Image (cartoon, rainbow, N blue to C red; front, side, top):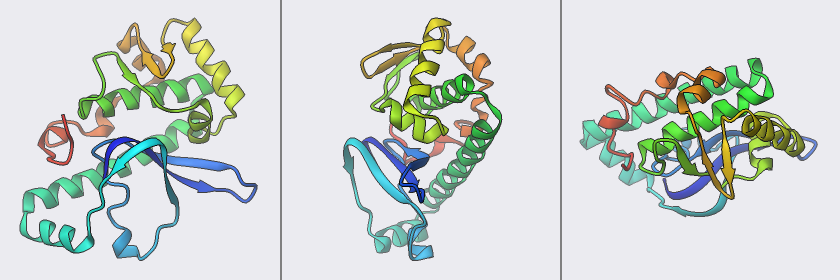
Length: 197
């Protein structure tokens, strides 16, 4: 489980390029079902400094077997991960560059708010442009141009590792971002004990 920092799930292609298939933020479990499969079909890497806690399989089995509420929360977390993957597929396959990046920035805002790491309209984003590119299928140069367009349109402000949004609703509308796939409530994050506030 990630306690602090960012990590990602990724695959390395034959040409040596990296494709990020998910971001893992504080409160997320890197791969809940690895023990069932025996191996993972992807890699997990940190982005900068990360504090990670290892949960032995026997402990997890005991907790989920004896604590139905925890078992439900872990099942919920897995279902949200699947929903995020579906949203990413649509975002990558159907949206132009500006909307892809804006959508990802909106997702980070909601996910980081859920764990108390974002304000109403801002957060620290420890990603490089190459990290955003590996998640959106774009080159670093294309990501840079895209961020400049979002900044020029007044949707995004960037200062160092901090990103803010002058009008969150306008950004969400531009990105066609509907946060319902994150299942924050009811029966979502507010009920899930693994997420910090």
